[in-house]
Each structure stands twice: as C-alpha cells, then as structure tokens.
Image (tube, rainbow, N blue to C red; front, top):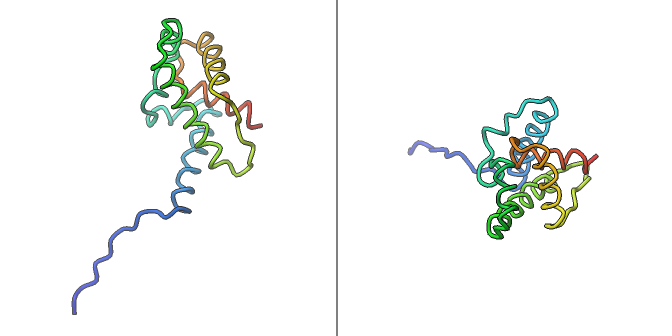
Length: 125
C-alpha cells in the first residue's frame, strides 16, 4: 500500500476573502492605536513618502501621479471588498489626488498608505 501524501491546499475563494479581511482589520486596528504594523508590509507606490507625491504633483509627472492613483484605488477597493459593514468608500481619481495633495502637504513625512488609512477612517464611519 502506498503512503498517502497530503499537500497543503491553497485557500479557496472564501479562505482568501477571510485572509484579506483579517489583514485589513489588523492594519486598521494598528492605525487606530497609533501602531502601524502595516508599514512593514506595504510595498510599491503606497509605501512612498508624501513628499515624493508632492514632488510628482509639482512637476506634473502624469505617469507618477497615475501610479499613486492606481495604487490608492486598489487599496480602497481592497477595503471595500472586505468591508463587512458595507460602508464603502467612494472616491474618483480627482478626489484621490485632491485628498493626497491636502494630506501630504500637511504631513510630508507620512506615507501614502497613511493618507489612505485616514481617508478610510473618515469616509467609512
């Protein structure tokens, strides 16, 4: 008789959704307590500083600005997708640019994900 070899299974759709929900809840809880464990896992455009966004905006670098908007839309979509309270954040590209500009001008050393976490906390009340 051959031994049975069990391979770990990838999470199915429900399992993936649960993992995403747990990650977002942990990030939002960390942000609300002043600790930001999420900072260690954010990658790409969202991990850049607000001063980098301000520089891209000042130089009218459309490709860079599009990158910030696209990352932001993905971050917000991830929140909306996993939001069990169904208090979705609805904001268009122009609104994202306006929000990031205002937040980053006031907080140049913050990260883009910090700006979006604050936006989510305000809009999803």
